[in-house]
Length: 437
Ligand code: SF4
Image 1 (cartoon, rainbow, N blue to C red):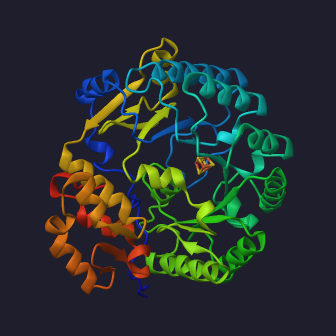
Image 2 (image 1 turned 90 degrees about the horizontal axis):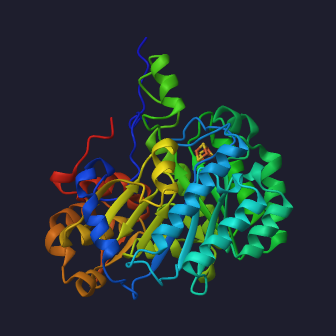
């Protein structure tokens, strides 16, 4: 008997576009360019993002492709925090960053809420001491629902967190268990209620369309429950199976060719259904992945990064983008902590972009917003993306993925739902990768 295959199955590989040029083009030979930037005078007019990376989690999720650490002792966490604080102090002294207060602060991971309330207070205090706090406009913080109780959330609110993001992903305990998530439905409701009580100006809920075991009814339930909670913004990702995940290893062991998750058409339809329901509930679509309630609940960190802000990433494997140069820290605790504690930059690999690569990176990132203002590229970079991308834009207009307006390129909903695969067509041949298998 022949079993028919889905039209566009989810195969192993990573489709999600996060940076340009891809990390595989970064190397140690370009590290001196980072030092040159750091030694140069500060660009005080340029917005600055501070990203703090906490790599610990209670459990490793089956679909997670980040380098995360589970089961670390309190002394190991303490050792990491010491390294992180030492890196922050040394970085803030560099001439390029000296005197520049961050405009946006983002705590990501891993699970930043894995830290205790007192460790968080210490971390916030160090940022204020070394970089200042007066100009901070948004403080975003990622949480795993099972790691936050009322006291910790109140502390985060008091410390200045404005955007609390809860990694809900799904409400069904069976699906959460299959995904290896550490939390269950009950903890979602406890965390959400406590977060509302603490008074954050924006609570975001993360969901994933196409988790292992997902059904039509289950996804509808996920949408309904999210609407009932009534958060300020919602982020919906489409499930992928990157190579360095537990789910991929299981596929290999079972000689499975196709991932046990829904095909792409189904995942896109589910996101579309969710977006429609959320729009009906008063949300606006803000990007390929997010809906939000109003101007006060925009995601400022993301918008600023995708419009060319500098970003200082602190912590193991974190990424920085400073003065047109990408740099990533060492990817392992062992290789990161030693130089950081010694006050040396724990940099691992870098990429120095030329002027063409700088505007292309932002063009590709802004595609994810669903709207590109071509006039902005003319005034910021003196380039007209139409000259470079005219035929491709026209082709994608005909295919129904986007509409080209006078000075704006607008993605249609169909285009937005497949934006990561569309973006790959705009990447120049010399920077194409074969990371999708
Ligand atoms: S909680 Fe987040 S970072 Fe941690 S393992 Fe799960 S997906 Fe990865």
